[in-house]
Length: 336
Image (cartoon, rainbow, N blue to C red):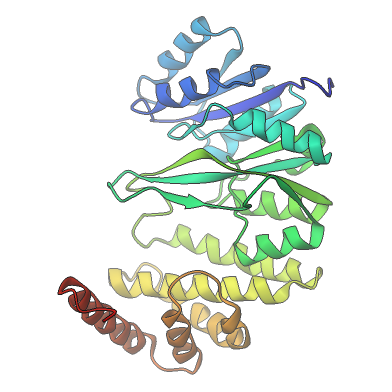
């Protein structure tokens, strides 16, 4: 591997994204860091994406295409990894895009700190028209040691996303994606448990598009419970690193958020799991004070749920308070 100009393999799973694919690939081929191998993995897409991928091969010699039967996002990433020959691996989801300097900043951070992984900040682009949000993981170019990295990961401050990171080739044994929902979490858990440090660029460079109907935004369905299961596993692993507090606080918050979603949707798809969600909140009562993010008032409602107040009553009260605040704010009276 050339330390001055290592090859980066950029893996792009492609499935039913003909509306977004050109923007995605264009943002990669126009990177200021040019020593790239770009692997488009056509995951049996039934639209024009296979032809669009083949057309990109003719435009840029760094691009190659893998055509395969549909196997899901994780399987497509694995196929891209198998076809890659780079010194470092990066992933881009085909409905997202990146800033021109993203891979330059990531590789420079890896090399500067001799770190096997680097992370950039991200823009959250809401397709519904909401203002762009920002996920900041570091204020400047920096590096965290193992315990600090695990603390941030288990607390949720450092996300498991595959696509805002660069991985050195020796991490390949841990880059094995499953077909489950939230497939990024077990991979990140393995990696952060094994590496000694993680570098950060301190720059927003990845545009993460939030589409209506994605797993993150979909109405309540059983597959979303996989997030809770993965956070339970995070908590179990966190105990071995003396990080049980941050991991439990995140699990409690996610159970509370999921219960709120169940209440709002009036769905019965996950009724069998409600009691387990309530048990997790009650068992983690001591860590509610450590919950990060969200509105501070929600910690009060979490305490009520943990104290065995019926959750439907808690969320009913919460909704009334939200409505009252909205009305006051609408009339320009809030905060006076």
